[in-house]
Amino acid sequence: MILGDYHTHTVFSHGKDEIIDNVVAAKNAGLKQVAISDHGLGHIAFGVRRKEIAEMRRQIDNAQEQHPEIKVMLGIEANLRSFDGSIDMRPEEDGYFDVILAGYHKFIWAKNVKEAFTYVIGSMWRNKFGYSKKYLQKYTDAYVKAIKSGRIDVITHLNYGVKTDVKQVAQAAKDYGVILELNGKRISMTDEEVMEVVNVGPKLIVNSDAHSADRVGDFSVPMGLVERLGIDKKLIVNWDDVPKFKNRKK
Ligand SMILES: [Zn+2]
Ligand SMILES: [Zn+2]
Image 1 (tube, helix red, strand yellow):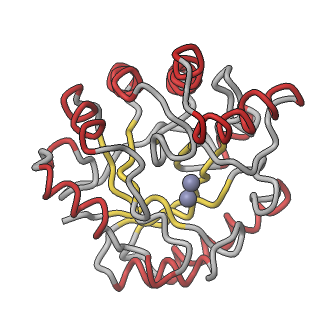
Image 2 (tube, helix red, strand yellow; image 1 turned 180 degrees about the vertical axis):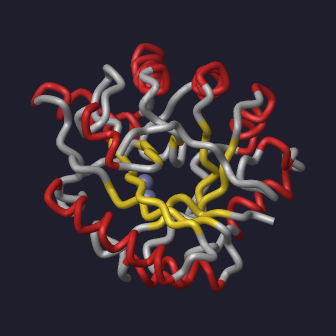
């Protein structure tokens, strides 16, 4: 079974419930580990504020003390915010987090004004009217550069909001030991794309992406996909096991 949920939101971004509620829900779901991973600092409406990080850590420590039978981690779902593959926090801030996830989201502060148009608004335009080869490669390169940066543990919901050549992303993930997520809310790849990823063979992780405590530990969407496509569970780092994330100093 899946032993940990590493992508759950709380009131620190736009989740419904408190950190402690997610922890209790994870414990009740029989999980051994849970991470609180709210939206990154560059999310326009509901990203974590820098000044809130210390308070989140305090609540995590508290929850950990109350519930020693489950390991509680502080994560972040950082935003990929540029064609250069950068994320919306400074490298010296990485050490605040036990796990760093990163994904593409629409409502973010792009790296600069130009990229607000070419990268963010451009993706919405292209989702409607199609991707040129050049831009498909530019978005693919953004993911590959982010993976090669060595800062990220998990790429969330690949191809949500923006298209990439998933084979290239999967190859980079495999080469650099970054884990690709099968998201609990939606799979944004076609079955063919999922199988392209699987055939390359990077590590995968199954997460709920819960925005309320009652969805923590709900893996029905990604596990339904795993069963339907016959994906080898040995690729899934949190199946009957717990993953190893990068070592960051606190
Ligand atoms: Zn997300
Ligand atoms: Zn999320």
